[in-house]
Amino acid sequence: MAGEDDERPRKAVSHEIGQDLSILSVEELTARISLLQGEIERLQQAVAKKRASRDAANNIFKS
Image (cartoon, rainbow, N blue to C red; front, side, top):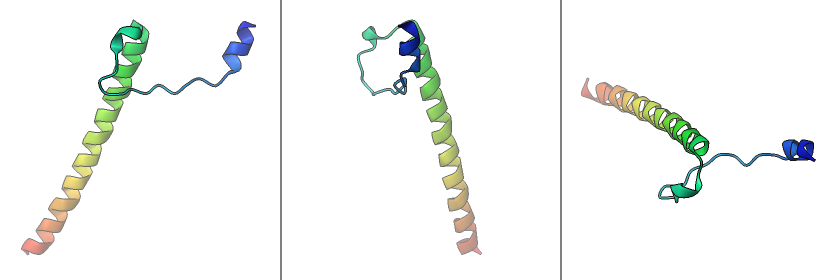
Protein backbone atom coordinates (compact mmCIF):
# COMPACT_ATOMS: atom_id res chain seq x y z
CA MET A 1 0.00 0.00 0.00
CA ALA A 2 2.87 2.41 0.68
CA GLY A 3 3.91 2.14 -2.97
CA GLU A 4 0.54 3.46 -4.08
CA ASP A 5 1.06 6.68 -2.11
CA ASP A 6 4.41 7.21 -3.82
CA GLU A 7 2.78 7.04 -7.26
CA ARG A 8 0.22 9.78 -6.64
CA PRO A 9 1.16 13.21 -7.95
CA ARG A 10 2.35 15.50 -5.19
CA LYS A 11 0.75 18.86 -4.67
CA ALA A 12 3.05 21.67 -5.73
CA VAL A 13 4.43 23.69 -2.85
CA SER A 14 2.92 27.14 -2.76
CA HIS A 15 2.63 29.85 -0.19
CA GLU A 16 -0.16 32.27 0.56
CA ILE A 17 0.81 35.54 2.23
CA GLY A 18 -0.69 35.65 5.73
CA GLN A 19 -1.27 31.89 5.81
CA ASP A 20 -1.46 30.18 9.24
CA LEU A 21 2.05 28.82 9.76
CA SER A 22 1.25 26.82 12.88
CA ILE A 23 0.01 23.90 10.79
CA LEU A 24 3.30 23.52 8.89
CA SER A 25 6.26 21.37 9.91
CA VAL A 26 9.82 22.65 10.13
CA GLU A 27 10.57 20.91 6.82
CA GLU A 28 7.56 22.55 5.16
CA LEU A 29 8.55 25.96 6.51
CA THR A 30 12.09 25.49 5.23
CA ALA A 31 10.74 24.53 1.81
CA ARG A 32 8.57 27.66 1.79
CA ILE A 33 11.57 29.82 2.66
CA SER A 34 13.52 28.34 -0.26
CA LEU A 35 10.56 28.85 -2.57
CA LEU A 36 10.17 32.49 -1.54
CA GLN A 37 13.91 33.21 -1.75
CA GLY A 38 13.88 31.89 -5.31
CA GLU A 39 10.90 34.08 -6.14
CA ILE A 40 12.59 37.15 -4.62
CA GLU A 41 15.66 36.50 -6.77
CA ARG A 42 13.47 36.15 -9.87
CA LEU A 43 11.69 39.42 -9.07
CA GLN A 44 15.00 41.23 -8.51
CA GLN A 45 16.26 40.02 -11.89
CA ALA A 46 13.06 41.27 -13.56
CA VAL A 47 13.48 44.68 -11.90
CA ALA A 48 17.12 44.90 -13.04
CA LYS A 49 16.14 43.99 -16.61
CA LYS A 50 13.35 46.58 -16.70
CA ARG A 51 15.64 49.26 -15.26
CA ALA A 52 18.26 48.49 -17.88
CA SER A 53 15.66 48.78 -20.65
CA ARG A 54 14.33 52.04 -19.23
CA ASP A 55 17.83 53.49 -18.85
CA ALA A 56 18.72 52.51 -22.42
CA ALA A 57 15.57 54.22 -23.71
CA ASN A 58 16.29 57.33 -21.63
CA ASN A 59 19.82 57.51 -23.04
CA ILE A 60 18.49 57.40 -26.60
CA PHE A 61 16.17 60.35 -25.97
CA LYS A 62 18.82 62.38 -24.12
CA SER A 63 21.08 62.38 -27.17
